[in-house]
Image (tube, rainbow, N blue to C red; front, side):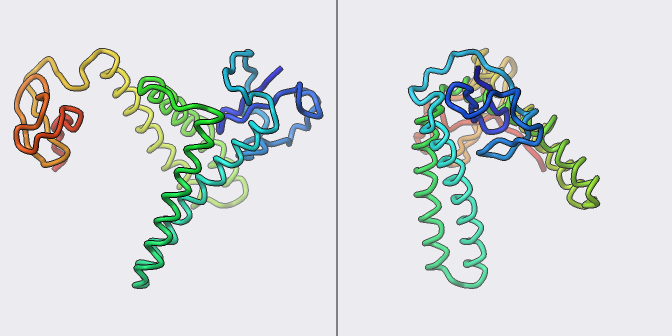
Length: 225
């Protein structure tokens, strides 16, 4: 039997591990993201990855997590260096961060794969839902129980943001599936993300009449001022 972590996707395969799932201690955590045991769910034997259930699969997940964290960390370091007037060091941090991103992408593609846009939107929405309904709710509760009220509030506030992320992904998925990503029922304005040209009409043009960029660079007009 296999069990998948709903936070990071790590798969615990009883066939290759030292213990059966039910024999694991209640305080056992995911070896990749440290999520508690209750964040796992049983899965059917449907994985198409040739690494499924192997130690190599676990290593790929750990490599992905490590490279992903390093990438973000180096962007933070670049910001700090730039504030101190150290442009060369900032640039090197950023260059390294970009390289770590490519490493992370390579490992992610190997053990998980990068799907089509509709599949990715569904996966993104599911991930955001997990974060705001369970992960941050648990973290806020535990922080509050341990006396870290300020941090608990931050966890709760970020959960609100993640909820809006889920809503946005689901809306984009709906538009994508019903074919309204670049068209609408009523006359609308479409803005070219490349040059800022505003096109009035039911559907975005095939190419921007100003800069020539394709339809893919248009988005619905949305004034927030």
